[in-house]
Image (cartoon, rainbow, N blue to C red):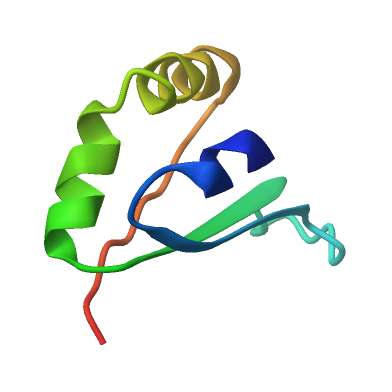
Length: 70
């Protein structure tokens, strides 16, 4: 996962496990900052990202994604 940090357009990538462990918490969190919207769009189709995303879907009970601009 951290290898994706080297992709063009990725400014920052952080991944970590939940430390609260409440019933409403998720097990893992991922935050990626992109240079711009075009970098996000390119990342979604990137040959290194796609198999990792597919693995995440296969092993996860539920995934939530939030994309926003600042």
